[in-house]
Length: 268
Ligand SMILES: NC(=O)c1ccc[n+]([C@@H]2O[C@H](COP(=O)([O-])OP(=O)(O)OC[C@H]3O[C@@H](n4cnc5c(N)ncnc54)[C@H](O)[C@@H]3O)[C@@H](O)[C@H]2O)c1
Image (cartoon, rainbow, N blue to C red; front, side):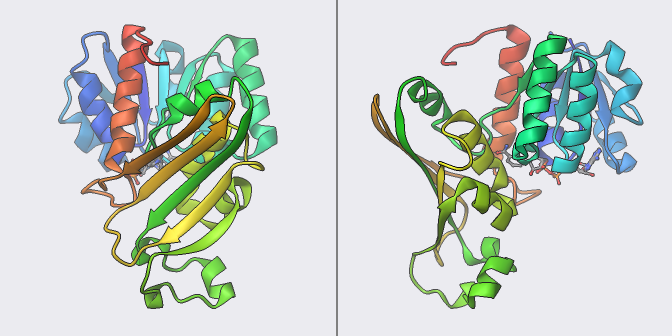
């Protein structure tokens, strides 16, 4: 298998190092808008080549992996899916736009390729996927963050909430996932993944909790439905190189690639 990794930051680098050790991965093409980043990563790998753009090797590539930004995801998804090449998307926020998402999934179906979206920084997506087959009464995502992660958010400034003055664990926002992804862009990927798998952006409820003592992000996914009830907690460890990205997000990308490469679908 030949893969192209777009974005050689935290997730892209960890994924490239893991892919380099996979026997079934024969070639890794690396793309980054900061060329120095791709070149530095290439030096650590045996199977990698830096390319200028995803198009350069698209005809020789079996899977494109986006680990860059929402903007990059939109552009690369259109190109890969347009040419019938499988794509794994980490910047899931790119799929919040209903029209764009429908177009991409329709094109992928017509062109016989797949769009893979790893579970990312949240656990419990397996249960959500299965539960959604029958009636699902409610899906709630409760995200707890420290004041630093919630600083400079226009919503709080407009409401006159000073996040540094909150002394106790407090629910500072409750609303739909659609509204939450617009108000809290840093939380977009997890809320988008949960919404896409379950009851959608307008029915999924997002709560944001500010905990002055929180050192990292905590996501609680709560479901109620015909299957029963589920509550799944993820206490994330931030990546040392980019505290905004939970370490689990990189691991989920690596585990997704392993499944694709080995064609093993346990616990799907
Ligand atoms: N699905 C999830 O749960 C989840 C969790 C964490 C992060 N993410 C998302 O994954 C993406 C990557 O995260 P990260 O922590 O590795 O980020 P990062 O900032 O460490 O790395 C991103 C890299 O992409 C490069 N880049 C940006 N735009 C590009 C473009 N148009 N073309 C090529 N390269 C480009 C940057 O130069 C950088 O090297 C982000 O969009 C982030 O929001 C998703």
